[in-house]
Length: 374
Image (cartoon, rainbow, N blue to C red):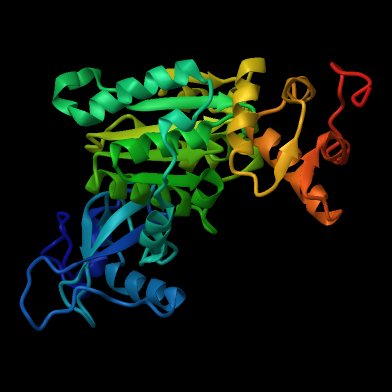
């Protein structure tokens, strides 16, 4: 049995001796491993393996690794079917413990790579397309200059930024524009997709996400709805794996691994629900505000340019009617609904009656303009 821990020279026949020598250690509850290949290479070797039954793999691995000490970021080696094939220990819970007959062993195959690759986003959005949000744009300038010249900043580099505000105010749009203009990879992921089926899966996914971003740096990680996994401690009893996920996030955000030239941007609608330890890692919190009158006018005008129908609208009145709405709501709930209503009624021109229909169908009350058609 080979391993890169101190028991490397021991063979399977001496497993009882391994356990005896580590009697003062705890038993591992969970070990998550990831196949990484052989330590050497020659033409006849195939670096890739396919796990067809994870439950059978767990029994197979536990039998041969029984009694070995497991430490995160170290490795275990197969000595049966594919001798010397290495597996990285992504998670050991608790860390620096030994594998027992009751230890659960989980393997990460290409599932996480698939998640990371699918979350890698390309966009044609430009920063000039973002209306308003002056503070966020100023922070983006700093991030831009850092990613263009990381050495200039040294230990003062921007690392973790929190965007917060009502839905539809442009948080995701701004991140896409930033990645597009810098031409760097953007790993955009919903926090809920980081939650696994088993304890340990969430931490493994977070580790893999940051590792992937680091391998392709400079890059940006955008975790939307981050409060879904980084809940405040008063809510952690609602989910058993929250503590494990929070600890994994803290490890990555603290930069214990070398995540140079990787910017982490979290987004939430409710910063008050975030775990305090996670929230404290964000160097800056930037609020995304609802558009004012001038910004709403610009948003409306920009969207009307791409309308497939002509329109006859009182834009000043429309600006007042949409007070309190986000840019996304203006586009999706008002303009799009008005367009579809026009088409459904065989109309050729979008008018204020279609806008009125959109307002009523989305249950948006008009408090600023009375007598819309007076």
